[in-house]
Image (cartoon, rainbow, N blue to C red; front, side, top):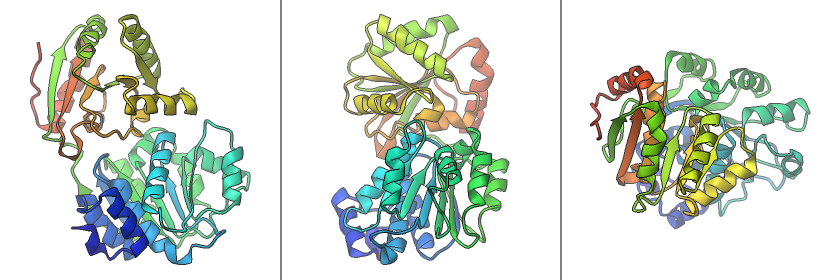
Length: 369
């Protein structure tokens, strides 16, 4: 579908035209009309499929008629990480450029003062991480009594990160009558069960199953001893024809250690993970986007908030122990029809995990020498 077919209001349509949105993605074509009708929704879609626009655009349309200069929170988007909250807030800013709807992102890791001051001025759309939202709810600095739309974004990652109890507590403070939109990149039984407790007669949308990898991504694996991984990575990263590389480790400590090892080889890199301060994470992302550094080392949780156009190179320095995580990792490259390269380093201890990945994607990865 084209965006013109959604019958969007003129200020929203004008903003989308300026951004260059013409043809909707699969998740947008299926989700936007149903959200505009007021339906609850369960959407299974990977990162990079246009999911944020799929809920942000109809939310702006639904809320514009009753947007007052100072208003209560009408829509709440729960998301697992600070980076995702900021990214979603940026999207609302783009799409709602010509609209009076006010939006705000709140998250932990920074003092709450500025966020509270902004809340007091009035917010229609709140984008929040569960921990900070629950904290402000308990301080009675936020009321969700007038909430009309609830969105759970990246629900699988939210539950993986241990936010399930926080989310359940938040749900006790929202009206029972509301529109609920549930988005997840994967839909195992536990996520499905949780979704079913929240939605009523939902429309279900399943776009690009998590078991699939983009055809535009060229994949390969090196079978290598664990103690040789850093040397091989250094050799690959010294290829200056690769403008940017995103390197994945399993742990925060492993990411920091790898950055130090690369620095000794003369390769300037930065790490991004949950133990880094908000300023350090944003600075690393900004430097990577603007090519001030060529290498970003990330853990899986932190990487969910990385949305960078023209990322040609992903390296799995360590094989993930959850097969679906591999699909998410390499989904950072080869986006919007562009080509990408995804390379994995597999040591003896990781072979079982690697076999599980190949079973999931149904693809025998070429062995690199």
